[in-house]
Image (cartoon, rainbow, N blue to C red; front, side, top):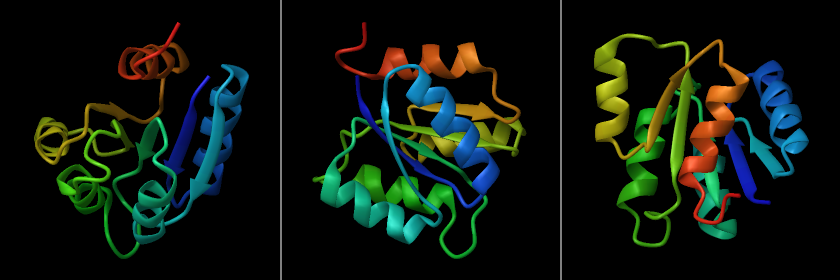
Length: 123
């Protein structure tokens, strides 16, 4: 179906999301920091990015802002998935350019529905 990149420093979350997305027919890649994630998005232009917020170095808000302001990557939809559950975090994430903001623990059906809504050729 689609090539999706996960940018998350938690090996457990990456494994959970990868399993869920591959079961749904997607091809999944992952990196464990925002800086490497930005470079991979620029190089590969995945159909969608799943972005954690809390990571060492550059955080997910900063990485999302960088990607959505870059003419090369601005059209790649970003779904932020985080433990940060305050309304201000959600609003800030969306203001940085994220197309969706989901809090952990993630509901599998909610995540897949969100991804399907954001992918241009989703069935």
